[in-house]
Amino acid sequence: MALSNDEILAGDRAHVWHPYSSFLTPSPTYAVRKAQGVTITLADGRELIDGMSSWWSVLHGYNHPIMNAALVAQSEQVSHVMFGGLTHEPAVTLCQKLVELTPQGLNKVFLSDSGSVSVEVAMKMALQYWHSQGRPEKHQFLALKKGYHGDTFGAMSVCDPVTGMHHLFSDNLMRQRFAEPPSSDFYGEFNPADLDSVKEQLAAHDQIAALILEPIVQGTGGMRFYSPEYLRQVRTLCDQHEVLLIADEIATGFGRTGKLFACEHAGISPDIMCLGKTLTGGYMTLAATLCNDKISDGICRGEAGVFMHGPTFMGNPLACAMANTSIELLLQNNWQQQVANLESGLRQGLAPCRELPAVADVRVLGGIGVVQLHQAQTLDTLQPLFVDEGIWVRPFGKLVYVMPPYVMSADELSRLTQGIYKVVAQLS
Ligand SMILES: *Cc1c(COP(=O)(O)O)cnc(C)c1O
Image (tube, rainbow, N blue to C red; front, side, top):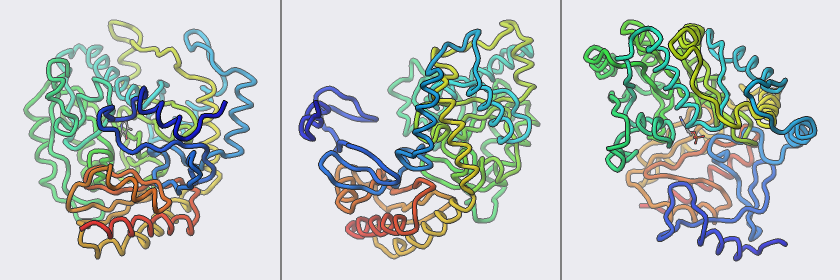
């Protein structure tokens, strides 16, 4: 009962929403037959080297024998069971590991289904915490412009107001406060004036419950790498103003920036941390919100006496088993070396792009490579050019960026970066 490539694409165009998509002007869409290692095979037979890790998620490559075996083994024990009143080894093992690996003090773990939900949970934790402290007026969030935290309403309310098109939803969106993002580069000198905007907001508004940010790398909002000193000082400012710090490590977690968690670049621990994307190595959807004992004690002593959240698929055993296996592989595989190899390969491979007329900047941090263009390009023009080069790269606006699976070989990586060079060289 296999559908042909044309049948898949026709059905897709008729009925299937894609991320940020239109049925009237659909973007080029390709049917995938299978994926193996770092190669995606299309239904028409073409093979693409994956530069995106399927949006930061597939760490160890596709169709990984150990991951596959773990999936089957867990399915033969229990695939799903409700988490109210029941628990199981995969969830307990995972939460123990996350507590061990994440920055000091994050001792309590709330499992959920996706990154956006983990952000909702983080925001709700902050609100319930302040309520429990007799400070219900602390109900607003401070976020950074150019930030991205997900697409559900709470998460959306702390995304960049312009790129998040807040005006479309203005009657339904919680009104938050926004600070200017840091301008000091990760590699450059820190400019203390970067903190002015956050300082101003914190000083002027007692109602702020928490500051939420993506540590070190502002991802979807611009792929910007900023100074660890900024993060360190923001932590101090939050403490001074009795504001909680929420670190959204959904994209940066598990080694992508060269540290296991991006907060480690600054040596700080947030009050609440969100994890997702690559938590299961790209096999299942799963996210986690961690908090310290101050937050969990406060919430549990508060009016409700409980934390008011509980998704149907909370702690899904299959997803937890995949997360456990992915983390084991990560630690066994010497991820520091893998990410260092990606970093040097990306640096070397993307450097020639600097000379191209269309290119404004090239930057690399850990396993993330960015070629920033002078002018925004439409996806519809660029995407087919990358596919013609045999690589899977999904740019947005002025940004051509990659974050390859950690298992990519030097040869595959140089084919990826050469493909990017060739496509960007065609732009003027
Ligand atoms: C992707 C992402 C999210 C949202 O995660 P979903 O699983 O897509 O809901 C939130 N924050 C950051 C930093 C992300 O990169």
